[in-house]
Length: 358
Image (tube, rainbow, N blue to C red; front, side, top):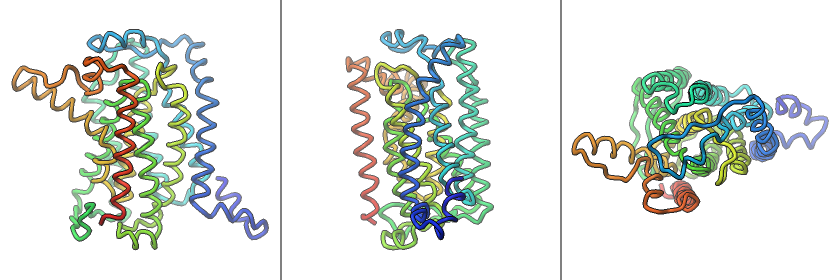
C-alpha cells in the first residue's frame, strides 16, 4: 500500500523515487517485520496465558528432557505470518500475481496449521489434525497454487544447476510436481521443528538464499549474465523473503533455548510450504534440496526409520527425526541446534555459489 501511495508522488517529491527499488523496499520490510515480531510476540505470549490456553503437549515417546517443555505457549508462528503479510501488503507491488499467490499459499497453510495447533491445545494431545486429512488439505492448497501458475502461462520447464542446456518440459505434469515440492517442503520443515530454534534457523538461511535467487531471476540483465531462467516479476518476492528472514530473527529472540514460545504447526507448515512454492516460482526447485539440506536430512531420517522397522524390525536411528538421535547420543540440545544451524548456513552459501557455476 505504501508503494502504491508514495511512489506515484516521486515526480513531486524526488526522494520518494527510492520506493521504485526492490532492494530499498526489501530493507524496509526487513526492519518493519523485525520490530513487529520483537514487540508483539511477548504480547501474544501474555494473551495466550491470560486466556488460560494450555501450552504445547509433548510426545510421550520423546526424550525425557523434553518433559520440562510441557505447557510452553505455542502458535507463535501466527505473529511471524502476520508480520510477513503486513510488511508485504505495505511494500509490495500489489498488481504482481506472484505476490498474491505466494501470500495465498502462506495463509492457506497457516490456516491448516492453526486448526492443527488448536486441536492439540484444546484436546491436550499431540495428534491434532489426522495425517490423511492434513495431507489432503496440504495437497489441495498446493494444487491450487500450481494450477494458478500453470494457467497464467508460467514457464513449466524444469532446469538443473550445473547443466544449463538440460531443460525438461513438464507440461501438465508441472501441477503435480509443484504439489510434491510444496507439500514435501512443508512437512520437512514441520519435522525439523522439534527443538528450540532448530527449524527457524534453517528457514531464515533458505529464505535469505532464495531472496537472492528471486532478485536475480526478476532482473533481466542479472539473469542473462548468470544464465539463470528469467522470471519477470519474481523480484517482488524478494520483499516477502526479506520480511520472512526478519520475522524469523524476531521470533528467535523468544524461541531460542530455553524457548518461551513455540512456532507450532501454524508456523512450520506455512513457512515450509511457502519456501517450496517460492523455489518453484524462481525456477530453483532442484537447488532447494541443497539449500534446505537440513530439512531433507530430517525428512529422510523419518522415512528410513519407518521403512527399516517395517522391513527388518530394526531401527537405524535411536529416534527419528534425526535431531532426537543426537540428543539420545548425549549431545546437549543447544549443541544440536547450533551445529544444525552451521550446516544450514554452509549449505545456503553453497547453493548461492551455483549462480557462478553454470
